[in-house]
Image 1 (cartoon, rainbow, N blue to C red):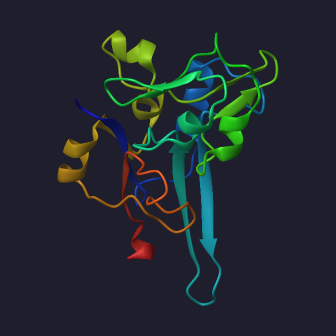
Image 2 (image 1 turned 90 degrees about the vertical axis):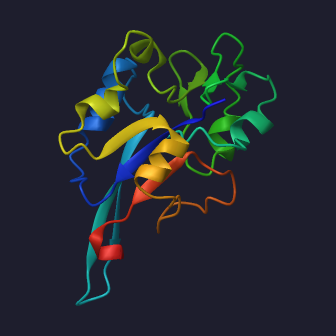
Length: 181
């Protein structure tokens, strides 16, 4: 069984938020509901000020807190490793939103359910790439089998500013920004 995941080249990311907007658009999310968010970090220790952006979404973790804590059992891990919320089963309690260390699930007030990145399942089934990957002008995001991404790029799932990978074993790998090396 393969495990899908993401690779982010933090050194290439300019923080433009095109990936965030593309994700919001393809999911038809209302204002305030994000399945992908570009986060900005800054170490303001003068004279060595360092700033970088990271595009974050669901990391389709090996041990997803959202799945383990969902009282309605609306969350499942698919054969390809995607962590999916069945919105027909979701009771809108927001437990998944509150327990995810990465802030991946979002509550959708209009529908009274939670939602999150599903790696653009509908697009991928039509032979397309996830919206975030296709829209990234800097080509800073890749997706695919996480073992292939790790062997091609790096095995680094930890960066300053996000929770330790030891918590949930996220299926993500990062190329660090040059200021972090």
